[in-house]
View 1: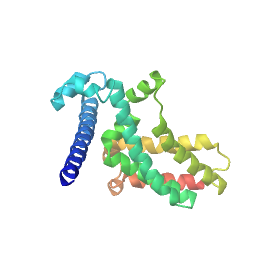
View 2: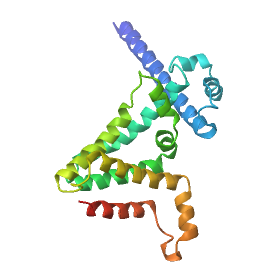
View 3: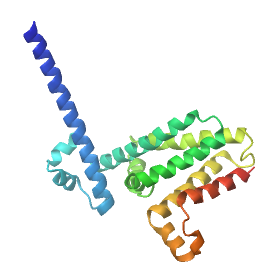
Length: 222
């Protein structure tokens, strides 16, 4: 009986190790691919180049992803899952405008803490191109993130905010404005403008400070 138990436990342990190895390798493929895409551009990177960087065969990558487009799609999904997870936590904030403010700050924090994912999700065109061309792929994670914003703006409208503005137009305005701020910051343009054009007393302007100004504008809209 003890021998049988030991054999069963050994089999389980071996299976767990294999699963962990597969998951670790999948993460490594995505990590290396992300770095290569951002450094060289999507078109200049091939499955072979990804495989060479990891020191595995291209065939091994094909066990996980059918092609290069599938790899960048997986990265796109992963980034949006990370962002959506932050929005889900904020769903418990009852006052809708406070929730909207918290979502904005969370979005900015995500961009600053994950600049590589942010560029791949919101600046590179290639993931969206792949989704548009492959009918079997959906923008599910990205759609969920935007729906969180839509729902919050709708709640704001029901509390008297943005009452004269179309729901979808308002959500798009908020997202595109905050995205613009984040993009300018990540690309260095925001800091350069502040450094070269602002009076000395105002050179401590931060992205968060600019967001606070946006909040005041949004709160005044009826």
